[in-house]
Length: 234
Length: 402
Image (cartoon, rainbow over all chains, first blue to last red; front, side, top):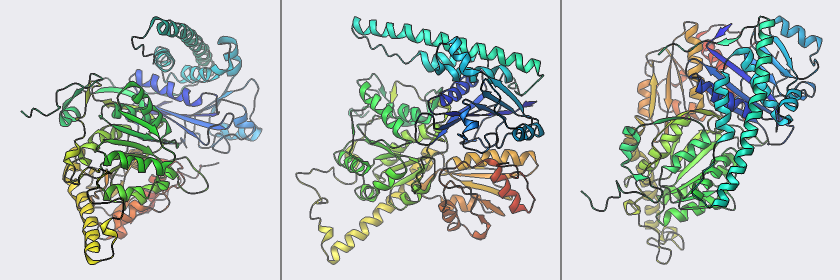
């Protein structure tokens, strides 16, 4: 299915980087020349509390704001979103559109028979990705779990290009160093930090790529298609 | 050529002080992908602000902290944190009395806590700009965008504008000072937006050049003298003559209040020029109109698209300024409408009340849909409201929560 707008709901827990993931996705889509906005939704900020973010990508200007009540794609960043109901909607897939997609970060199935049947009725595809394991393996830290969620949805839907994701990551994590002509010591400190940042960037990008490839392969194997239309030529 | 004009000179950050009209309407723009909070920072970078006073409250904390960075970079002359919102707004008054261009930000419970200061600002004719990133004010606690606090601000004598997008926000922060500081206006501005939906949302915003900034505030354009605490001109702070109970003091007080509201009225012509009208309209010849302000307008725009797909034509009125209130403009824009749908992010429906008070046959106004506590308003529920008004059965929301 090819749509004018792809609405992605990211359900995670505080500290997992769901907000960052949506921002990076929207930045990348914007770099690809598409219309995109992203915004978070959370209560009091604390780790492991429910946190959601939303990324809307489309071929015409997007006005819609706030919580995504009727998403095309839901990404579950943590099993507790499902197992402990750490979600803003019950069940977590409430509002999912027909022929939508659910990506779950888990190395084991989590859905009840009832959930499976309901999603089947709605022709919703469910894809499990062991995101945290991939993050540990590729980046050496579970903090890069959000990168696997970015990569997998991008790989399956092609809503953003790898090239744009690379640029968006650079912008989010790479820049923001204002070297204001300071002393040699300051310069040295910045260089050191920059070396670290470059490493972080490279590992994050590698994690995104791995998940992207897994997503591409899954979509091909399962003949799943959910895409944003191409922008009309100017 | 006025030799005292600062236009064309350079400030210590290398920004050229630019005629505000040239800067806002003619200078090239650069598209940037920013959150609303970052956009506030970028506007203030170019606003030649003297004093910013901050106090943390979600969802404006990020913007307040980012302006702290601007202070560190040297773009804002003075910046500090107050003890509470009440203290902040009182300190803002002090800085403005002293002739400074003042900026602050607040939200929800912070706005309510500081409320006493706002009619005082207006009465003292202080052109302070306050960003209000709306959030729920009632218990149980909510940090989400609920616009109830705006209804309180409407009665303070402040100018009140309601931005829909980060782009509005960027432009209106800069234009706001130009309107506020006009000698025949000289009033504070509450520039409101819906928290999170604007402050925490990344969107494309076209920025003016970073090497241009607004002309500085000229306190000698104030219609009332700068405050000198050693010799207060009208002894406003201690033992003011207007507190004496006699005819003169009553008459003074009444006329002073009338003058504040007359100044709100006089801001109309400036606001129309800077904001290109107090309202924005689309297809107002349609039988059905959606009329609102803030992101309720955005949700309305999405609903209009969904309805167009089903062959139902709906027009739109975006209310940009709430004070001054565009009563005449709304009366004109809604004259042909059979149904006027007013979606709002608050439980009382203050926008619907304002509209009802301004138009004939006010039973055309459908005061809703409304969401309280900062919950989301999916465009689908506006679609439902429109269909209900037309007598069309709608099952769009039947699947919600299934």
